Amino acid sequence: MIFISNTISLGESEVEINAIRAQGAGGQNVNKVSSAIHLRFDINASSLSDSQKQRLLASKDSRITKEGIFILKAQQYRTQERNKIDAFERLKAFILQATQVAKARRPTKPSRNAKRKRVDQKTQRGKTKALRGKVDF
Image (cartoon, rainbow, N blue to C red; front, side, top):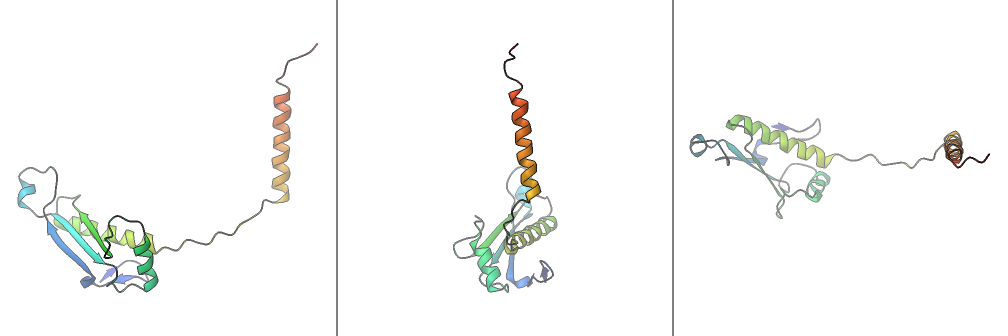
């Protein structure tokens, strides 16, 4: 069981993990060891609620395919175990970020005192600038 938050959790069978060879520098070791992790998460077939699925699919993330599969490649670390942990952490962060509902903004008005202070500051600034002018004797 993969725990995302107190209310969201995924089954182990919902996430497909494959070990692949990592790209980039690494010498001879990179050609022998499959240390990178290729994670696939099918959003439509997951146990998430319909609203959460819609929010995930609506996000403008390039890692989501047209079929609704979230694909992640973790190859930052040298060991397969550490890359697997990194992949799960990144999946968790993606789901939390996409399912987080923003609080509705309530428009507010400035108080009467705040308006008065603003006008007083503008008046004072104008007086300061007026004193910079040419002096007549």
